[in-house]
Length: 128
Image (cartoon, rainbow, N blue to C red; front, side):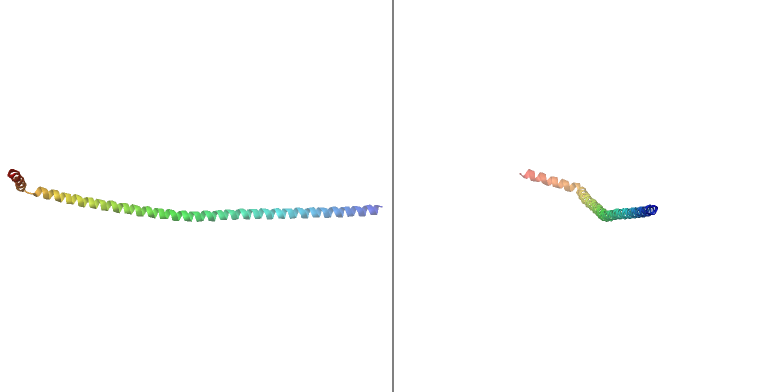
């Protein structure tokens, strides 16, 4: 009977060791699976960040191009405004010169000529 008890004890021990080995293997497999899930999640998060960074980069390129166009447009508008002001000032100066010449010619007319004109007007009115 002691031999049977010993055999049963060895068999129980063997069964217990196999169960423990299976538990250890199960725990190892679960840890490997968790590690794989964590790595996949990290890869997915990194991929999302990369996609976000690329999208932001593309948006910045677009905005930069738009800002450059805007700056160029403002420069062109400023140059056009400057040119318009210069031409307007030149035209005003020509007008002022023409007016000054006309005024000078009017003033250069001799006083006798004015009198003559006045006299002509008087003579016309006296004829009637």
